[in-house]
Amino acid sequence: MKTYYDCLPCFIRQSLDAAREITDDQEIIGRSLKRVIREVSEFDLRMMPPEMGQVIHRIIREETGNPDPYKYKKDKSTEMALELAKDASRRIKAAGDPFETALRFAIAGNIMDFAFAETWNRGRIEDSFNKAEKHPVDSAMCEKLKNRIKKASSILFIGDNTGETVFDRLFIEEFPGSAPVCYAVKQSPVINDATEEDALKAGLDKVAKIINNGTDAPGTVLRQCSKEFLGHFYGSEIVIAKGQANFETLTGADREVFLLTQVKCRVIAEHYNFNVGDWIITTNI
Image (cartoon, rainbow, N blue to C red; front, side):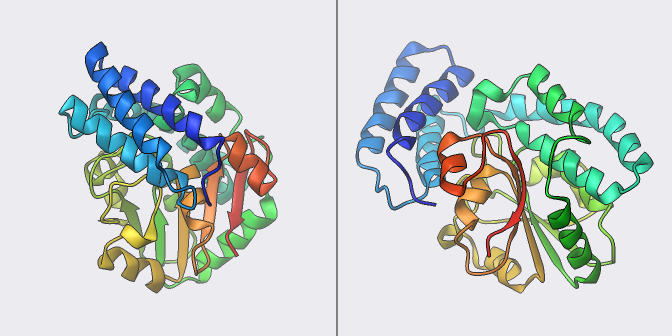
């Protein structure tokens, strides 16, 4: 997905929100914001929005001198997710279709997104999970994915945010068949995207082999990814990608990808003919 003019003020807002989340030092906030504004003014609109996100958060890490400025909040989000997962697990096991119910909880978990700070609070997170079993989803696409997983020989699952990783684990536990699963995370911190450390805290090593994609970009910018990751991306029979940044970066991929996300951005909603708030189960081809 290319970048639209409407994305530019959003980049600036995200950078200001992010800086304020990390520090109350006005000098650091101002310095970061000015650098971001300069970068935004020269940004090539043919590039994808997450590529600007990568620039923004590199600047914030540099200006704060903190290589993982969201670490405390990431750890707290994992704690919250593990607490919420106890009830989710009971509801999944009691469901008539545990696979679809687990998928719904995985999408519900996508609300835990620090790139959209205005949506990230406990009340909205709990609301997302409370409607997990009744929010509209494409059940036909869910069944298609279930049947494909059952027959698959290998699966790559590309994760998104820390915290929702816990619900990705619950989802993977309900995969039919016996295909080995690789779970991909970021090589190094960006926003609250999951790294290997975060995935381990969520227990994903119990259900999948954890790998990293070789980048610090939000989403999956394939031209930046490592050869190892690309081997899994093109060599796995099924690729599943979670979250809006993966949706933005992988809709143009040259292989089939199952995309699971909540739509949080008006520009994306209009570009793909969705509504903000929709829960999406789709493929890119």
